[in-house]
Length: 405
Ligand code: HEM
Image (cartoon, rainbow, N blue to C red):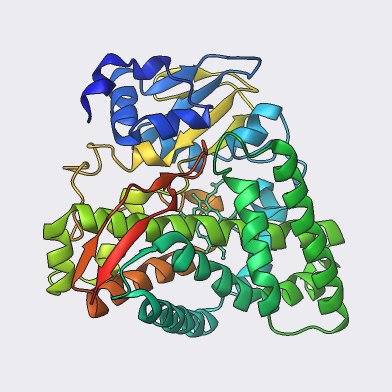
């Protein structure tokens, strides 16, 4: 992209360092890696172990599918994979494999029935319309804090029946645990915030066990898995994963949608004129923004992937943000094209751990696109956005914008 990138060697950058994604355009970074060394070994640095970075679509899919040779139980994102374990392994859906994973996933899916989700999607649209009504035509505002931050937390809050008064606090803890907003935010703060969330859900689950409703916390607190109630720590970890999964990535895709449309006026026109459907536009926004840049696995056997020999015990990271721009699958991948079909992006992952909340993620993005189409004539970006400091979530913690009615 920009001229300075030409002087930088993408293969020498540290893919574990969050600063890499603040300083460099990920589209450029991953194009270089895919073209030059698609099964890239990120060398150990500053005491951090080395790991594989898988960048081609086909190779990423083959690892996602391969539950025989790869496990999620020793972490599924760089931070836990590199420390060698995840304290929630075997207790939280995303870091649990095999029969127990399937059983817990099925229990949670019962709270996500299509009838219930249709109702939730309608609430998302209403809430988004109300938020837009408060900002369209008001001059410059921050789309992140004034709109996006308020949508997903309330959706998952509804599904979990989290009291309204507690929701803002959850967003704040959440922001600290997933993507620190700069290198200055400390690890201790991150750890404390995670504990706050866990304690919060511990007490909520306790209340629901005594007094269950039809929300997902009650389902976890009262349901049976393989004939037995779930232990308290599993209930709490799974609540935690819902809040984390639901909140930040959905926010990032909506914020990214605003930016992408402002920067691609002909696509904005196509959306406004009804030349593309909200469904198709939603998929392209998800591909284009790919909020969860990577997930990962640990190899449990020696295995060959994309011509490279992975050794038992190796950490293997799967870069959705690269696979989603792989020309072999997405012709003209670097073009934002709301009419793109097919569009089998990997923003929600693939295989047995495919995102449990994909329906809700799509509902969030679709609601924002619908409001833009119906209530906004022009999107202006008056100032630079602020990028998140993360090697996992890609997006913006602040996006100054003006939406003209
Ligand atoms: C799993 C992305 C929204 C809950 C995943 C995975 C990805 C992902 C890539 C796969 C993880 C892996 O393979 O290790 C996203 C994106 C979202 C989104 C981009 C929004 C745009 C949501 C929402 C919820 C949610 C709204 C909650 C309702 C989960 C859970 C898992 C998961 C619980 C673990 C599933 C399992 O291990 O079986 N998500 N997600 N996500 N997501 Fe999402």
